[in-house]
Length: 412
Figure (spheres, rainbow, N blue to C red):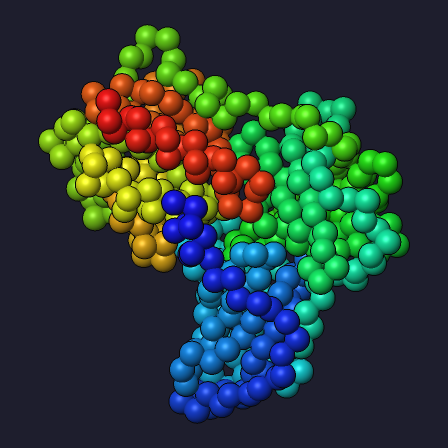
């Protein structure tokens, strides 16, 4: 399964490329250089989140824009709207960019249409730049595991487990895992004793900065407003809570139940005949969620492998939009872009719909995603909170262990 899943990642080598140009004749737009670019999203007055992407021509009005985070490749589209104007559309997520080309750079705004208030951040990008942050080799007594404390000494304190590595031609890469998921593929470098790491997956803006001593002391920024101080200590023995113990059925409940509509409005229930004598995975998810993105790709492969052996997967999606019609569009886009072959239901259509209220049998829903494993009698056998995806060092072990669990579940 690992080989199948990793095959989804287009591990194209990114390097300094000769800049080529291509005319987009049907729109009359100017040519954009092909090859590597560096983009900068201004998160706030003091933070510029940098990331790289490749541009290549798809046809006479669309460029491919491949976003690069360490080993991850995200295939987006840069669509010509007219002379020197473009829209950069993301897969899965609703977020997008509106940009103008002045012959030297693209400039414009990064827009989140589902935010509760007007969400626009300045953006610019230049071709030919491959170095995300300045790289100083002397910085790195860094590789290995670290215990991370976010918001230390406050009521909002929480923990993470970081793994960082460094290679001269790649800089720093790794991730930070928490009890509810991970911060995906972080990439960066360091200079003058300061570590800088970032990730942009199409919707989520993660920027970490830290001074490197015997410990890491730094700042974490997410989106346009979230900020948390963090410290990290070298610790290869620190473990996060067991994700199979954090969510469970409340006292008085003996089984899991659901009845929610499809995107088209038809109600699907766990009691429907098509689920009889089927082992099931119930995925609590949302199209806005970065770890759900990873889990959905993984579960799609799981479903293709085990459907004929009697496995059903049902996604209960809770959307963060303002209205039902928009939620339908968001969910349709997610299902299409991820090519999800299993059942997808719209469990919550606005920001006010809470999973914990719609699923009262659970003690809480502390993380998107959460996966509930049912046997063929639909008894709960395991509830897995969060998802540590392919950007983490525990990924291969998780895939192997989960595969063994599923085979046992299906053969009982």
